[in-house]
Length: 154
Image (cartoon, rainbow, N blue to C red; front, side, top):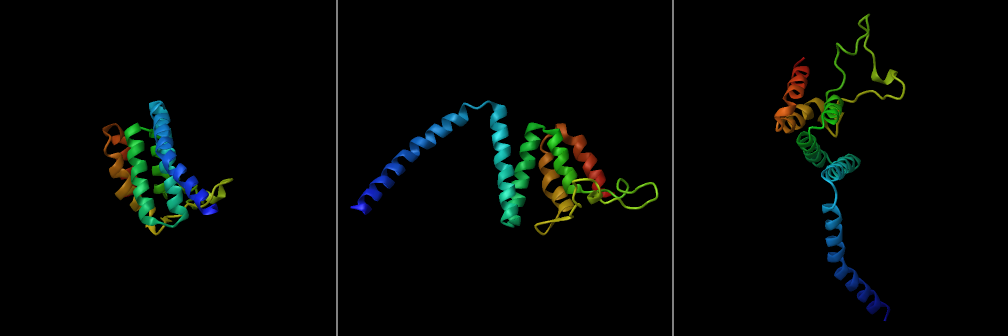
């Protein structure tokens, strides 16, 4: 008898799963476009964090590209700059004091030193080969794209 009651419970759950999925779809459809964008962005960020935690370089690169495409579609300039700055890292000219001594970002309160590698990828290579091409899909971001390409060349 315990097995049959468990099987009945599982059947009920399977039968209610499509109804629950339909209700969730209706809730998502009721969101404003801004809410849908924020939910999508949060999902992609979560997937990127999961790929990092699992040390899955291929998945991370995939989700990074989708993240950049999403930011590009929404013209999220602030987030685009944050992403590009993180991958670009410090530039020698910007990170030298007046005496030419290098200033580590770790010397700033609460900051950690920039690491040039991420899951075996060179961050600048990720910027050049994954993020910037995704951003190029939006002509409104061309100036930002040119700016970061120029910084990568120096």
